[in-house]
Length: 119
Picture (cartoon, rainbow, N blue to C red):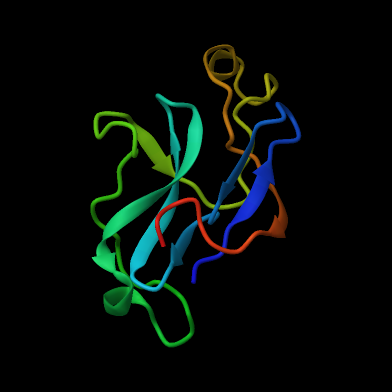
């Protein structure tokens, strides 16, 4: 079963419970994304099945397909891996900070087990 953690941005206080990168459940494969339109982190479900991409050491191999924002396929996003520099910090990107509450820099808390996506 996949594992999720709660990540918090020390700059803006945003938090999300997500895998923090690629992860597999019993059948589902997810990758954490940052949706630019929603300004949220999500675990987006890939088209591949866990049995096809899961290696013996637990890592997910290859490029995942079908990754998109779960709210709308038209939303732009970027793949997110913990930790990232925070784009909400005015010193790093003042224009972005005015438009977005960005979760780009997150610190992990205790894993919560399971995943925000269907596992």
